[in-house]
Length: 361
Image (cartoon, rainbow, N blue to C red):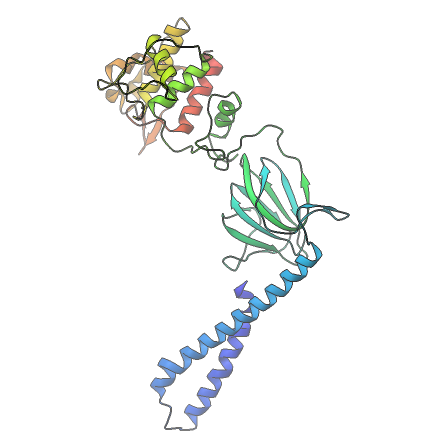
């Protein structure tokens, strides 16, 4: 918003500068040229900027007061449609579209929301116009300009957004995740939806999936245990680092008993990262040992630049997983790699599990 009233500040500054200029041309010996350049002119410009900002704030406060008077109260509906009297945070779901008229204000808090408009929408946080077709920035406030209709489209499972003013709302998806950090634009959007809706994965908290964070060995065992129906376990844990009563104890006992997973040499290492080759081995063992499936032949891994990095105990499982499309290669500087030693992210794990469930189960 500042840029719209900066001409006012410039005018005030020019007036002050003109006074200084007249003093200099009149030969006033009390005002030196160096003083004008180093002190007077900068202070005059600063004074003009401060005056412009003060005028801007006064104008904005007046407009906001009028808007509050018209739309006083909390979220509800009127003959004009829905309205919200404050910018308090509300949840909006995947695929919903919110249409806003001139004068509405909104605050983007968290999630992914696209913006399209027919005129001018101003980002009042940084004082710039926002082009249509862009994405809202978290913790920025926006104002719909004159003769403008703005449309917000939610792209993440949920989005946190505050609105002030009247609006219309179109329905979104019937089924969606509760995650702010998983959007339709992400390659892992469908896999995350798949594993969440089937109860295989939950978020790291109520509204975050944390797709880029690594899975650990305990997390994967819990997922596989859930896929098996969480059968009751009566045995004791064979690993000293898997205590009785923890959230992963039954899953580890079950996995070890079925031959799906073994220890690392220093226990089970439940908090250790689960690598891509460890993941495909556990999936291979789940299918072959627990489900008793006849496993399809694998593919030749020699086309992958790091095939020699695959551990001997994981080669058969890795070959099988690549052949089934459960694990895909990764481009590393123009070289296709399987990244066997890298920790599998939660997004990658969701993708692998989706393919595994659809092709193997």
